[in-house]
Length: 163
Image (cartoon, rainbow, N blue to C red; front, side, top):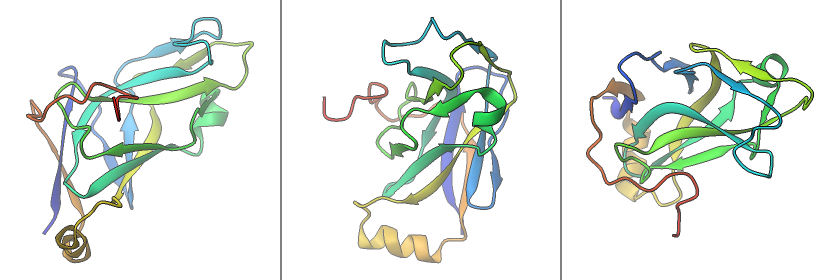
């Protein structure tokens, strides 16, 4: 039996996430250009909107990282090395974002629609119950299912934990 991971996109057209082993690749849903002088904040961090919202099973979290080729091919590094998305970040408008910094500040960074820039895997959270841990042991993995809407309450975006 596989556990379900529900996801939705902001727009109708989308590159579907693809699972390779334990990791699930995410694709850019639109092309972007990041100019060194036009960043989202003064710390030099740019938040790339991945255009996907995901509902994880209770007791699990997603760990998102760049694909290994992304820094050399796309001139960006992940600002915080790893992103943790807990299962409470699952509202209809809780879209995942990728925090990046530009490596070479003398040139623009272009990332085209359909390019794979990051990946995530599902792991047990530290708050998983005994039942959820047992389910993890006896499951045969996860099944991705695209939906039109996620019915959970919106969390409020990146950095909203504890507010």
